[in-house]
Image 1: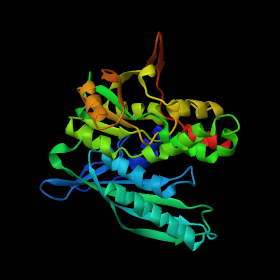
Image 2 (image 1 turned 180 degrees about the horizontal axis):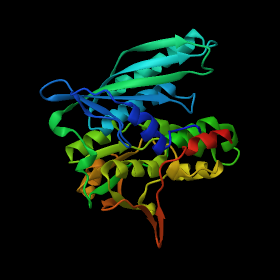
Image 3 (image 1 turned 60 degrees about the vertical axis):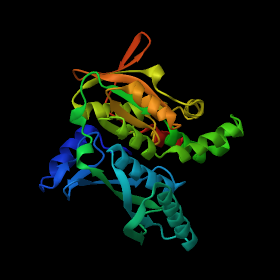
Amino acid sequence: MKTGKLPENVLKRSVFKMIKHRREEVLIRPGVGLDCTVTKFGADDLVVMSTDPITGTDSNLGKLAVNVTANDLASNGATPVGLMVTALLPVDIEEKDIKALMKEIDDECAILDMEVMGGHTEITPVVNQIVLSVAGVGKINKDKMLCADRIKPGFEIVVTKAIGLEGTSIIAQAKEEQLVKRYPKTLVEKAKSFVDEISVVKESQIAVEHGAVFMHDVTEGGIYGALWEVASAAGLGLEVYLKKIPVRQETIEICDFVDADPYKLISSGSMLIVTEHGNELVNALNSQGIDGAVIGSFVSGNDKIVINEDEKRYLEPPAVDELYAALDK
């Protein structure tokens, strides 16, 4: 099988169908476009949990690990509380590298008011670079839980910041030497700095306060993959306008350099938010210094359409993220 996410049919057939044991406490179970499980433990608060591996890069591992996990929790409307870190380490790693990794993780947790609650570290010949798997824990009031079945035709789609931020940063880090031969160093440095914008916790909190019904952080598969997954989770179609999808010039240039499609590039740092009142939410985001754009809306049926002037494109299930091929070039 190819690197990246499992194809949707394989995911349903060989993963979801194999999960058979059930407990009454679990309210949301695995599904396409659903990043978190929700479990009820108390009268008012629900515990939200998510897990993610970090692959495709060996730069900014700690920062990415914390933020990708916190973003999953935030996309469910939860307040991130803490995380469990599993680190598989190669045999040639030095102690200073382990210390630096843990400091990076703890520093990023401090920014988000999270705590490293536990985990596991192991040196193993099975890996030739650090492999992190992080499980996050968050909390949410039971009356504020977000569900895809609340999405109705006519509800609008808001995208925050810009697409491709994480992928652009990773490529700029990995290909810096080649990129500075074509582009100004300032452009490459700016692209690398996008990693500092990958948290979506703040915009998720604003979205919940302003009536968001569902959220999905834009990760592997890019904005096209995220749109497909949310529409699938809602059982609806959608229409979005290509020119309304925010993308920065640095992303366009770097994707052109590696022949990658920015709309299929991993995009942590951008949140896809579903709401009845898109412009009101955008104004609320803007007032807090966060860019946002209404890019389209949900429609009845199953067609997932991207409109570019007189042309229409029908979205397909997410394929392998553009990042992997870009790093191999």
